[in-house]
Amino acid sequence: MKKRLFSMVILLVVVLSSAFAFKGYVDITNDTGYTIFYIYVSHHTSDSWEEDVLDDDVLMDGDTFRLILRDYPDSVFDIKVEDEDGDTYVFWEVDIAEEDITVTLADLEM
Image (cartoon, rainbow, N blue to C red; front, side, top):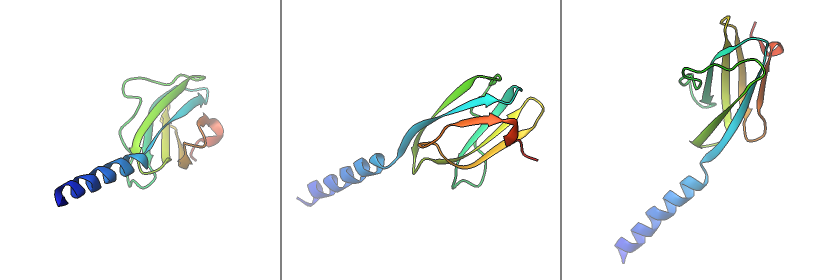
C-alpha cells in the first residue's frame, strides 16, 4: 500500500511540475536596416547570456525569427541582439507570453 501511494505521489509531482513549466515562443522581427548576426535569450533569473540561438543563420532586415522556448518556470526572458556592426540591442524582462520583439534603431544600446 505504501509503495503504491509513493508511486502516485511521484506521478502527481511530475504531472504538476510539467503543467507549470512554460512552453511558448517569441517572434523577433528585425526592423533595424542591418543584418542581425546573433540573438541571445536567457531566462530572467539567469546571470549570463545563453548560446546564440541563430547558430549559423542571420536575421535579415525585415525578417522574423520564431524561437520556441520550453520547460522554463515562467515566460519572462532577457533578449540581446547584435547586428553586423557589433551594435547591441537589449530587452530586459520581456514577458514573451504577452509580447513579441521588434528590434529597431531606437532600441540601440548607447
